[in-house]
Image (cartoon, rainbow, N blue to C red; front, top):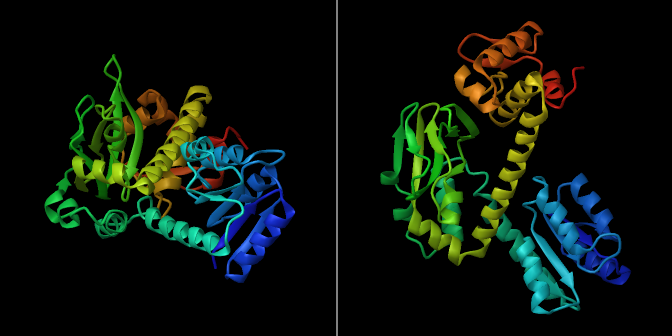
Length: 356
């Protein structure tokens, strides 16, 4: 059963809309103002949110702004309910990332059709951020853009095997394709004026690379190279741009991906800027473990000490010394080839700045 949230300060509109949707088989929750709506959205998992614009405490634009900044809620379909139909209001909402509008008063059938369409679109678009193989990518693109020749877009000839430490693209190059990681892990890095490598991020199976340069029509701002054997699918740039420019759903979804990546990068940069060495190493290990760790508590990434130091932003000697301390404190174990997390709870506390 799909779970919906209605944020509306008008009692009659809120109750009548909820009743209609409950009769249609949805699980419906309500909030009488924007502040309570945000609290409800952050404390539960909803499949879709209906939100009025003009409300006390916090208006609908403020609600959408807050929810779009939170990775948990940024991908939830968001429909504005409004009595205002001026183009400026529509444009403002769409620029903030709203998925649709319903102008009050609306018909029951209009309400149901809009919700059903957005839920279906959400399921289709969700495949792009949670794909597991090339077949899933192909299925997503098939749903999103039937006009594109999918056999040409993702085919065996567009898949290439890369050995460990091979380069996909270099900083300063213009993009010729969008890259999808079918298997393996890739690091994105930049080199300082002094020749020191700094790893900006690590990407793995099911993730896309190179889309920022494609969207901005600029050169790559970092180098992408494999840290283990990889299988990479290349999607031609002209086909990707056609999909982005002709399908608003795909465009919105990539914006949401970028928003989540920016938030993740901001958190990491803040920790690296203000945390001490122990906190910084713990933060990076915890981040990699939570994202890529396996059932055996392995950190999930075969990465050299030099690369890990570059990802943490500290000297290799400082990294090795800190890893040795964590090992002696029984937080991790290290067999020389891989790192296992023995106490994930304490590692997370260290990452958050607590030495308990």
